[in-house]
Image (cartoon, rainbow over all chains, first blue to last red; front, side, top):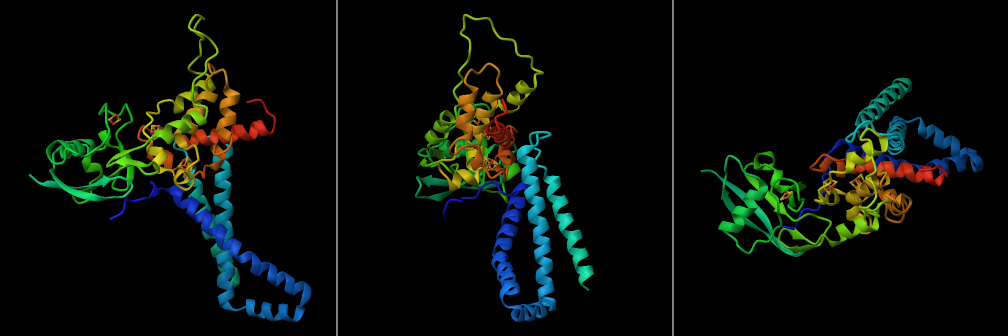
Length: 119
Length: 237
Ligand code: SF4
Ligand code: SF4
Ligand code: FES
């Protein structure tokens, strides 16, 4: 059996940083698709119309919903890091972990709003 | 009497776990268990300790996957179904069994400007610093570090980048840049915010979550980050 090589990771700030990073990666993966569709708008309106019709499919809507939720998570977790790094802490253990929950709730509310509007 | 099953790392970087059984007692710390194994069963087992009361910082080990000070860690707080796994701290080379080589850890304190350089000699009058001064309070918040390297072992950035100065050294630098008796604050700050310094920190706070004496290296590092921004903007620090 090998030595364990994990850090003391099971705490809210750690999971927030994982959420921040994974949402960032997912959004980064989406950017090329985004630019591709933009290029269709500029170069090939026929293909764009085809794509937009496709984008009305429920599966796409779910994807869009995921994107919006990821954006809110990434933005709110990022704001938390800026607050942690640039504003004074209230006490030593102040990881502003409440902001993690605020971000999750914001993502939930905006996600639900998006779904309600879509149907 | 019921027993505890203890797995202890034996060897160096390459090695394996050796299993022992020790009596489960009412009041027993991890360090007690290691000592019992060494005294009664395996005299060749290497480990470090000195004070046994949480002051010297020499007894830290990885216990059930987490870095801890073993002299102040009660078995009941960590044993899972009567089983404990004890390993050397991570992020430092293993010398033998539970002892690791802390040379880098301490050299990084020097690299972060950790040596106290005062402005007066012993012939001068003692400078009065009110404990209520905001700077003194910031320094006080980080000053009780016992150099145990628990935070250093908990830090993922140290694990990824062996040059990173790490939470304890940067916490020390933070106490110095807030200590009004220090004569070379600019030099310390430059070291702490320079290469491999505070900007490498990922803000996850493993260090703060693990420090056994309740310090917050993460808070100190963020203080340094703020100071680094202010000094970049040309504001007096
Ligand atoms: S907050 Fe910074 S110093 Fe502390 S464990 Fe995380 S990366 Fe390391
Ligand atoms: S900051 Fe805490 S965990 Fe890190 S070396 Fe000092 S006492 Fe140990
Ligand atoms: S033996 Fe001194 S801190 Fe544990």
